[in-house]
Length: 143
Image: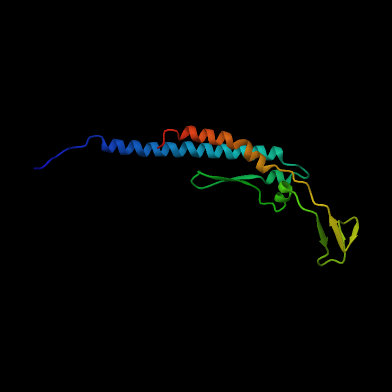
């Protein structure tokens, strides 16, 4: 016994699935990008300003598929501002004495450390609840 059948609409179904996937990726990409830009703007508002260099250096780097982003700065001292520094002794390396160009401090100085002035992590924490909510809503029908 032989059974023949024809499945109608399979091609349309496959196309609908592909469109659905593209639409979901587009939705997620937009949420990622929007959230990253909000975190950047918020971090810039929270950044302590001395010269403005740190504030201007905060940037967004989207992945090529735009499904993730990095927000931050490449400035070496940014972590010292965000987290502060411990008290430490600064000693002479190659110079004979330590100087700030106006005063001479000798061969070593005790630095009291610096207080943390968080700007990036608080900006992230502020935006993440809305990000999670928007992502959950966009993906609520995905099983």
